[in-house]
Length: 327
Image 1 (cartoon, rainbow, N blue to C red):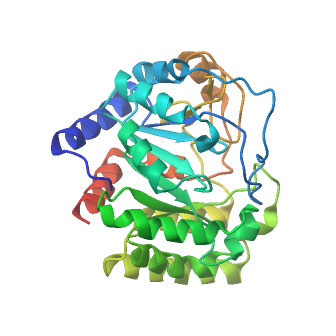
Image 2: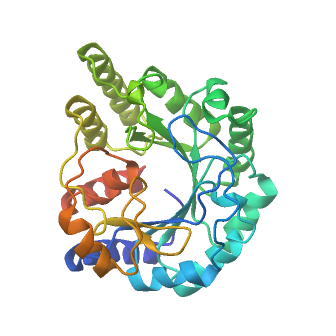
């Protein structure tokens, strides 16, 4: 967890529980561009969109004031290819300094100098996408020497002691056996790691799902190992509850009661609301999103990180938050 003042942590916690009561989101992801400098195998984005509108910083920042999320995630596409991203972050922080501001990136264009620049702009935490503990990551992301770059940058900036880097790994059929090694790398590099669940809604690539009884048994054993590592002090942020839910999702192929539009939502590149990363219909207000989408939403086919972290019960949120803080 990033280093935040006690007062700010208290305000974030208070807002989280207030938003649950009044129907405001816990997490808002600002997808400031759909363009990307990678072509990841598990994503339907990739490449540059020439005619994509470039909305000004205030167009995104106004949603921080209106939605007042405890967590504001800046993502894409690849958000760092927007040269005005520091201005977007500054505008958001000027509107509301309370949320945890998290940037999700493939790290390809991030370096030590830019790391400090973005921190000064207001970034609290980084989410570095990493899917394999070796060069397979480069092939999967179609990014030259991306694994090596992530490794070297983590080792360079983690000694600053900001506790602000989290490796983000999507769990799928061909990397599940590598999860313990990824956790070992996180500890070696002085950073943390979070695991989320693959779904095929974006690409239709069902072979990345974990569905056979043999593979599910293997995944269960791996989760047992991760929980043991977590108890031994490895910097695994994903709670045991969430890890077990991942197994259930892969086994059943469903995660009911999606709260897109209520517990979480997206602000897309046009600075309009969309329900989630898989549904890109646009809405002009949360009320419209709730009435036209959420009220009729019966999708059960994902258990993404934004769902896993936003849809927990108040009790589970408190338990998991206290566990991370104590780490």
